[in-house]
Image (tube, rainbow, N blue to C red; front, side, top):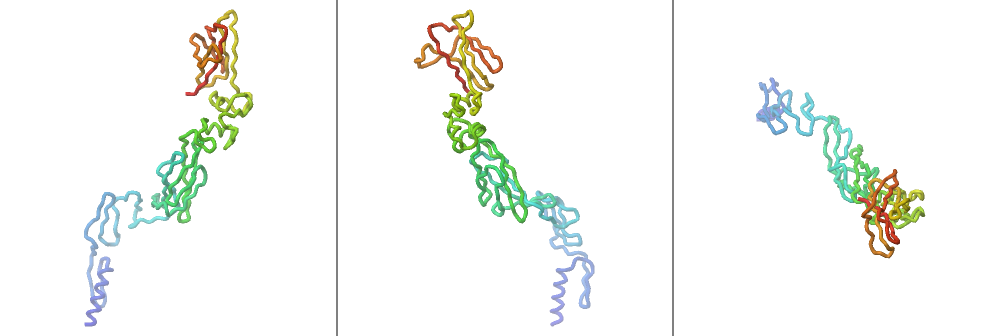
Length: 303
């Protein structure tokens, strides 16, 4: 019985290893044309695989989504050549969060997604206040829309991603927050966190505050940049007066109002007048400048 046992073991081994053609030894001879491991073709929406085992092996009938099928290979072969960060968007509003992700780059132009917690995250530049271990990035408060760069490192490779932090509130940055002046205007002329940028400060000694100079479109740190108003008589027209003011800046609205007494609580716009411009200088002529006194004021407003 011992030889029979040995033959049975050899036959079982041969059945698993045979690939086709004749197999023989001193103890047995087996004629095989092919061994069918499954006998059917497996299919899906993306691929089909012939399960018969032969010299050519299994083949994919169509590329699987996200992968590249290499001609003459029975399996997907690739090398990792880099890492690329990804995100749910290229922009994020200041103070909000953005989910980051990452993927390994293969040498066949395909990608292998990574779990964000597997990646080491870093902020290379720009107003990203932090990135947590799960790849959730938090945008800092900005005074203007600002570029940022983040980095993802995994498996010895590092990739970078550019983002833009959007300024959605013009008056919320640092010590300039909530003071009625745009943060970007204050940073432009005064830099960061400068007390001289406060709205009611007359930074250049002209008698006109920073708030007035912003509304008037002037430079708050240049004494020669100021708004001027003059009243002149009209020759030969004793009942008329000219109100001459400058500079007139595009995007502003200028309204000349008047009142009979300084103690009057309200002023009213001129009802009978003409207007002409000479460069940035405007002349408004009051055609009804009657009475013993009349006080004029030029109101400037932004849309």
